Length: 198
Image 1 (cartoon, rainbow, N blue to C red):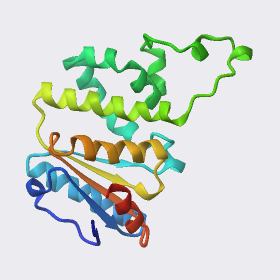
Image 2 (cartoon, rainbow, N blue to C red; image 1 turned 90 degrees about the vertical axis):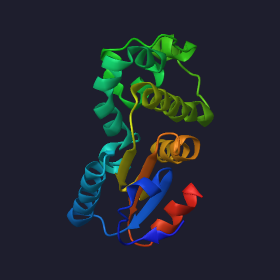
Image 3 (cartoon, one colour; image 1 turned 180 degrees about the horizontal axis):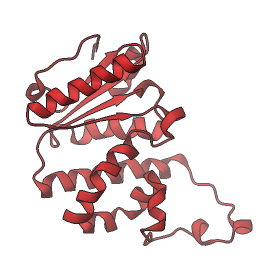
C-alpha cells in the first residue's frame, strides 16, 4: 500500500482500508488528523484520533484512549461484553483493576510475590488484542454502529501490542466494522509501517 502526503476524503470507499500518512510529527500533523476526523464525522462516520507513541502513551497507547471512550457505552449497552472480556480490558486499561474483578486468574497471578516465578510466552500476550477485537466486533454488531474511522498518530513508534492490535483489527474485521484506519508516521517511516499491514 502506498504512503501518502495528503489525506483522501472519500470515506465510504475506504471501508476496510488502511491509509498511511507520512508527515513530520508535531502540531501540524495532529491538526491534519483532527480535521480529517472531523470530515469523517461530517460524512456520517464515528471518528477518533489517538496517539499511539509508546514513549508518550505506554504499550497500549492509542488503543487505551479508544477503549476509554467506548467503555461507558459498552457498560451501558453490553455489560456482558465487559464481563466476558474482563482480562483483556484490565490489561489495556489497568485502572479498571480497581473496578472489575477478573474472573479467571492464573496460578502466577494468585501466587505470593516470592512464589510468582512463571514467565508467560509472548503468544499469551498476543491473545489480548485478539480478545479486544472480538469484543469490538460484537459491540459493533449488537449496537448497530455504523462506519468507524480511527486516526493513529505516531504509529511508527507504537508499542508492539498496539501495532499488532490495529493490524489484526483491519485484517480480521476491517470490512465488517466498516473501518477506515489512518496511520501517521514520520517521513521515511511510512514504508515500513505500510509493510506491516501488507
